[in-house]
Length: 166
Length: 111
Image 1: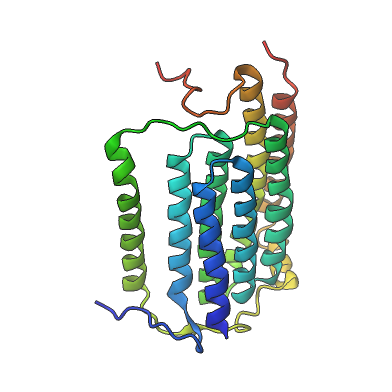
Image 2: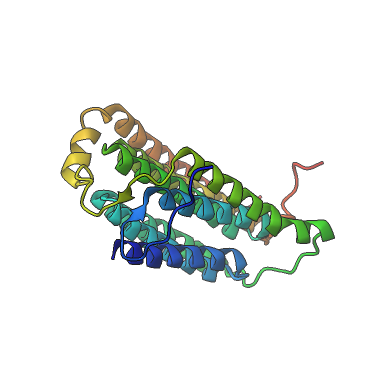
């Protein structure tokens, strides 16, 4: 059952990822990215990350993607223009990419031989309580620094977006 | 050469399948980053790569049975949100100044 669910979610994630790369209209890419993020949230849940799965759904698939869709709608650019690429670029891209995936997968399989499988429910440290306790004790300083970073980012975004055209 | 992961639909998932999924998603992000010519799509490909890295963090967190990986990926999410806000503001400014989102036409720094 675990394997079927994993293959289902992984298949959705990979298909949506391929769709993201192949679509020429940005709004289709954005919706594919939402699909990838939703499937990944379910995979996180399978790995025992309850809190992070919900954060993924709310922050990534919710807030960040809404921001993307806002900007796409606002700019209303439409389809991407066809560009003329060099011949070797067109034919060497996909094989190089496959070579990259095959190489990394070979490294992963070599370093981590399939010793034991992933069973749902074995990881118990992923609850909001466990993550929150660690976040507010050991990782308190990075957490506070992150809040300052967010503040700076907000101010920067407002300054950039409200600048007049010169 | 160690044995390849066996496909067993009824049993449990081998741990390294998660890492291979992460590799595939990262490669797709790289492909989108290199092939697409729209700034927004390029930006979304970066988000895809960040998601792939998050999956690796959470997989290893499972492997180690510790939740530090969850916290790291939480920070990655926060930084990605901040990056999205600033990046989209930059894209808005670029569009206001140049009326285009083609990445090849924004090349003032090239010469």
